[in-house]
Image 1 (cartoon, rainbow, N blue to C red):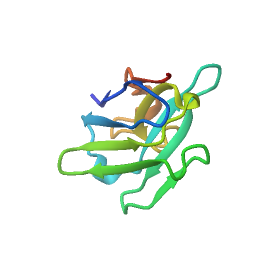
Image 2: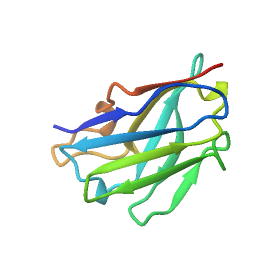
Image 3: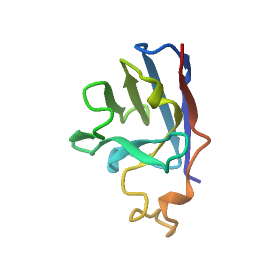
Image 4: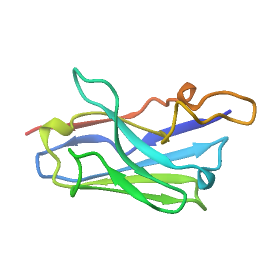
Length: 125
């Protein structure tokens, strides 16, 4: 069974930093483009950052220049370093494969089935 376990969130003041981690099981992240998503209050879940199996990286406009995504295939983990945090970064952060609607397991289950609990990030003074 595929599982993503996110950690590292918390309460931080504006301008602060957090490092999120995502531990994957039941899937080898090395063969997938991976991503961090976030759901901020009043908005739908959006893609914040992605990294391909060849380490090509893309960021959403709202986090560009402040967030850094990385992957450790040996540990089957994905990280998100978040710097210069703003109150509008407050939300729940999730990881998953980048193409959740078009990626399937070998048994035919689509990856949007496998959302974890996420990790809460709150940026507030």
